Image 1 (cartoon, helix red, strand yellow):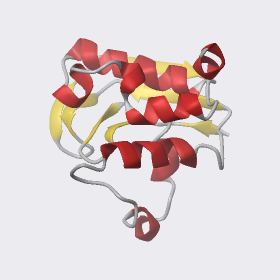
Image 2: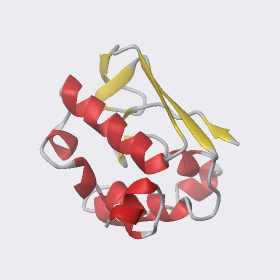
Image 3: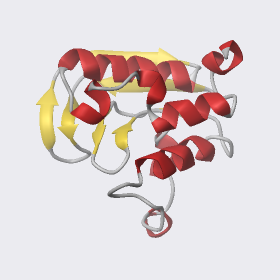
Image 4: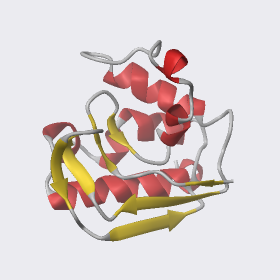
Length: 136
């Protein structure tokens, strides 16, 4: 299975890329039950990473031809880097996407923190997802 996520900021998940694509395939009624919002970044980020234990795509092709660098997922500051990322490693995919957002100039939740400190990434590495997990 190939996942086709987009690279952009997201008001509840901070960012949406390969890891978050597993939440995006969840039914709307179930997705609305997930804890997100003010002061829920770490919990929601952990849950996003954990959802990747259930089903793992074989390959990710991530669209950054256009991406929101603030706001998102529907409205925000749009940039057009014209890039597509491809990887079999969801963590590598997402840290590269985060580095791209930082290069383009994004909001403080991403810009002011290491890509490795993002809750989704940190938990994914703890769970053994991606190549970086073997390098702890």
